[in-house]
Image (cartoon, rainbow, N blue to C red; front, side, top):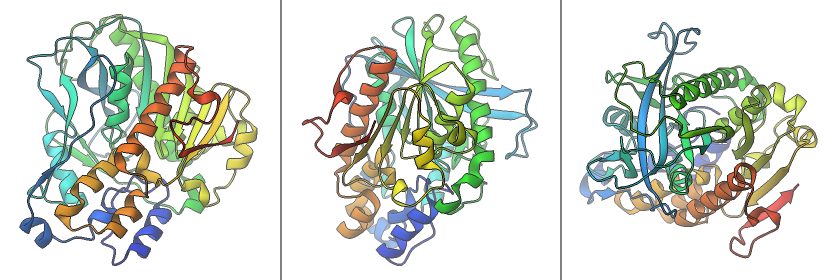
Amino acid sequence: MGSIWAAILPSVAVMKCALLRRGAAAAVAIGLLLTGPAVQAESKPVTVALPRPTGPSEIGTVALHLRDGSRADPWIKAHARRELMISLWYPTRRPDGHPAAPWLPPRAAEAFYRNSGLSPAAVSLPSTHGREGARVAGRGLPVVLFSPGNGADRSMNTTTVEELASWGYMVVTIDHPGDAAEVEFPDGTVTGHVLKPVPVSRLDEKAEEIKVRVADTRFVLDRLKELNKGQNPDAEGRKLPEGLRGAFDLGRVGMFGHSAGGATAAATMLQDRRVKAVLNLDGPALGRVAAKGLARPYMLMEAEIFDKPIRGQKAFWSRLKGWRLHVKTKGVKHNSYTDLPLVYEQAAQVIGLSKAQLRAANGTLPAARSVAVTRAYAMAFFDLHLRRRGDLLDRRSPRFPEVRMIAR
């Protein structure tokens, strides 16, 4: 669960070893950094596109800057108190006049290019389908929190976040500064990743870092209560979209996360009864939750991380006393449950990424299909446990033959 950024690697074999060594990292650059600036400069730029969400609603979004006056920031020394950036994603109607939000804000995008070794002349990062500041449509929306992997940003699962919002969920994405690769604050400052990587075999050493993420998440839940009352917790008091008051059903809160974000979601549910259901995208259980287990709905979507032994994971599964499901998707890599395969696949030709290198980064499942799988199973999980409907998770589905049920 180290930084998302791998060193420049001389071979696909080394690239694969680095991914396993970094374990739960969301490594953007593992395959892409194999190409050099000369290849990028001589090629026609490509704009990465995110697939449209399938739900009936248009999507609105807004970013908020939150400051927790009760906690010192353990990672960012320039912050006297813990500061977070979050985004809300929600259904809207008639969003004309509100611009599409970028996948990353401008200075965070600049940091992304520096960290990944990509050139904006070669690859343009995508726009999202979320309209900034558009009015919220609906009241009492079920709430889903999202926590990204270690060294990743709250944007890294935008395709799944947008899908949920388009079907009527209020989705709250959380950056964990110092853990995230690049977090841009309203004054234009950008914080980077400062935490040390550890091997997969020693992921339990990251439990203290997960505690910080859990505290971040519980703080965010408290601020959602304020938003639901019509208050404005943004540190700068910036204008919020209309319709936020009463838009959250805080009795129906779920959470999902990728990698370290999945570990964060499990640990948060143990400590906070407001979280009713957790979907873990290829992450471990770390810290106290691994020893105690959970009594509320928990689902694991596995890619490859559990192919390497992680201490205590089998025992953790036996301690799950509520609804539980473990599935594995054939042909995917650790990052296939994020937006990153879209970046790899669409940019491959422009940056000179070979088919072998693309398979090493993405797996054999096409990016569009991995997005479809992640979206469908995330929707099914939260629909079942927050809306009490749907049957996709009852049995193996002929619609998704690559998804195999491992354990209940």
